[in-house]
Image (tube, rainbow, N blue to C red; front, side, top):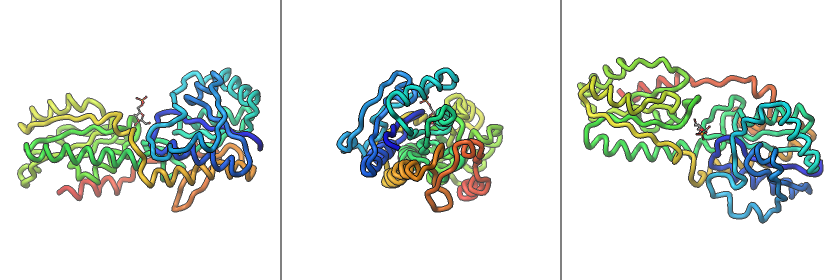
Length: 320
Ligand code: F6P
């Protein structure tokens, strides 16, 4: 192993910069050369590749976003582009590539590995929806950002004795919604994993909570549920309780990473380089059962993750 490259791909996540920094500095510390690929797989296909030195990653650990830029690259699903990307890696002397991103980015890494380029993934997504790991870089920051925003909405909602619907990120995954649901004490939590929610049950719940003396009602919707604004209108009409929808949106994906995100990102970044140096190929770094570990990309992509029923029920129990 002589030269490795690093890229970030898919939705950005706070802590990606800490991971980039760890990859670059670990590699150089161990005597390797490092290249940075800009704008994800798009940048690789466009040969947007730069040399990285330790000072290039100074002062970025505390910054949100990704200094390398990122993209969702649809072209990369096609075999001819995967082959082209592998050829570009070989042309630039890249022996291994570290991909920081979510499941979609791992599929790109898997494609590169099939084309003979050693690819190692690091879990970077605010959604926490990567099956092989209990932790994904960015989740802690995003969930804390959402929680703080929801606290603020709850203040005004309680003062006006309103019902609030707050939509948090997660098109396919409800972890931010579940965590905020528990951390903010939401009366109802709607997750994409169990989409067949019943609006009449929510209406009944609001009416019955009012009778129990509750002066506000907080509903947390994952983005994948959608329709928060029209839902608010229907709920107001059915309950007679003033109802407002707030969509938190991209503010959840930005901002300075928490200590937890910086810490995990740093260890995972270093580990991605070190497992390559151990001779491991085509792996995904993860954190499971209290330990940093790694899995084969193929195996990682076949694993399934689901919302824990008990944790979902706890949310309900605690809002009586
Ligand atoms: O994967 C992170 C995420 O923020 C999801 O929560 C959300 O559904 C999606 O990305 C939004 O993607 P885009 O940036 O393409 O709008």
